[in-house]
Image (cartoon, rainbow, N blue to C red; front, side, top):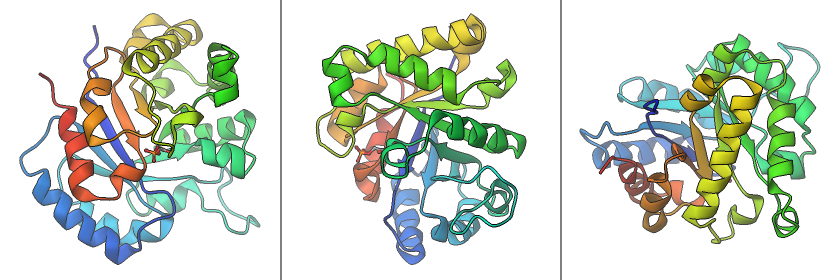
Length: 256
Ligand code: PGA
């Protein structure tokens, strides 16, 4: 079985000024001293990227991600930022297709696919979010929804590009609600995602892709989730805003 290093990302959403971000990192660095059991990605609002890019360069094992980007290189796209602008601040990852982008900002799989391709061409690693709503889960349609989102947002990628991509399974009904998927529900969905990737690419590629779980991950449920065989990390919202609670989740990724 492929060894997949766990990847724990802090999705701060629209929280944290750059000075708050700097003080968070001071605390997190102390909490995670000498820990190298997981890759850590901090995903702040765009405005904190410059400050964090200065600090993170000196912290091993911690890299920077962005919450979104536009797929064109430049031009008349008021309010948007390009992949090149993100690269200027040594951003390594970019979250694409988060459910808040899909529902509040109307992003489709087709648009997300364009962004994924642009990100990869600029050496940014996409973290592509997929997940069903509560109504879809209740109607037992989650496999259908996940397959559609994966096929749409990853269309046209080759296996090497897929290996540079991370998938985040985030059931919409678990995001910010305090209602986490059970470890069994999450594992079942992750296994389905990996099987779909094997059909779209090949079994070896699918066995190497990291699949994060997201949706009300907290220090007290992280370990059980992160020890499921197909769960390779977490995309953490609310509990990533406080250094100590985020550090506990990161440490829960350690083996054993
Ligand atoms: P949550 O958010 O941890 O606050 O549920 C997760 C996410 O939206 O990425």
